[in-house]
Amino acid sequence: MSDAISQPDKPESLPETAEGSKDLFSKFDPLIKQREDLLGSGFEDPFGLVMERVLSPVTAICNGRETILLGTYNYMGMTFDPDVIASGQAALADFGSGTTGSRVLNGTYVGHKETEKALCEFYGMDHAMVFSTGYQANLGIISTIAGKGDYIVLDIDSHASIWDGCALGNAEVVPFKHNDLEAMEKRLRRIPEGAGKLVVLEGVYSMLGDIAPLKEMIAIAKKYDAMILVDEAHSMGFIGPNGRGVAEDQGVLDDVDFVIGTFSKSVGTVGGFCVSNHPKFEIMRLVCRPYVFTASLPPSVVATATTSIRKLMDAGDKREHLWANSKRLHKGLKDLGFTLGTEEPESAIIAVIMPDLERGAGMWEALLKEGLYVNLARPPATPAGMTLLRCSLCAEHSEEQVGQILTMFEAAGKKTGII
Image 1: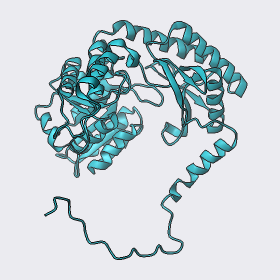
Image 2 (image 1 turned 90 degrees about the horizontal axis):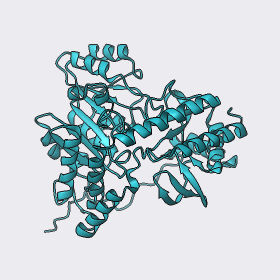
Image 3 (image 1 turned 180 degrees about the vertical axis):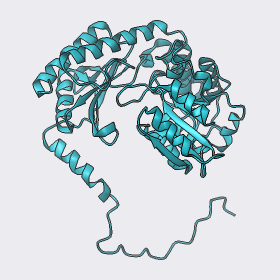
Image 4 (image 1 turned 90 degrees about the vertical axis):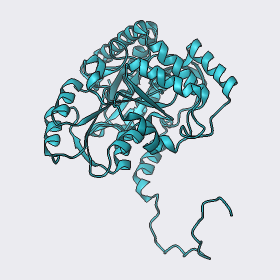
């Protein structure tokens, strides 16, 4: 008897497609036209840039010229750290290129447990789970702990992975206006008594780079007996006395039930995680589908993550330098006349608001020709239909490079008429 999964009998012939039936790609037609119009205007594709060679955390060869990188989320510059690279090379030689299995089968190596141990030490928490991506961490944790009949209260500007986690779990989703305490409490007040409640927040919001008033929000969530999940993807390693994120910085980390994070920002590699002090947390390893049914990270990747996390525990000087870079660039861009996403620098993300997509693409291309790469962000990923040039600073950017970046923005801004 074959051990293959049985398949239903196939029909001898498939029915012919009805004439005039809907093309499943039709829903993308407006976006296809927008892209064609943009490229037809002579712009380089802002979403298809190829880095021909990466020279350092802050420089690469793009279109044949050396370019300053200001759109990589490589906040702490760990991608070229010698100790991080050496640990990855050793693991690659000792354990091979991949695990070929899920964490609940053959996919747990000693390196995965070491990474989880390092995360527990970094956050001072009892439990840690490592996922293959940060997206899967949100997808898995949210969909598993909040299901049908439960309620998720979340900020309307939440990341796509958070929304997708809500959809996968089939919970009732109750969004509230961005960072609005009154709106958040109003939503919680209306949830039926006795229902399961999860409040999902982010420390730093990735589009505008603004932070959440977590202290006040967590107090409200506790008032209504809700569990709390905070995504610290864009603050881990940088914000807080020990780099644990906005929750630590605002003194409420001990009140958070789950912290989600990623390795693709400050840690400098790829992967995601959740840390928690909940006494039943370990059961997640058996019931969280995006964890159970996904191949685990390669040994070389978890080795680099472990080394990076341990080094971030003692990275106060790098955090201080990154704050100095962020404050200088924010002030410089504001003084030049650009409109920014925040009044004051709140994180390592600085969003420059563009008048519209076409002029934003023109500014993006002008900056690239100056030798500067930033992110062009457009609706629907951005709030309020804005087009943004999103800058993410790195602790490895020198003072001289920040000065060069401001000169490039001034030249490109004048060339395109943005300033």
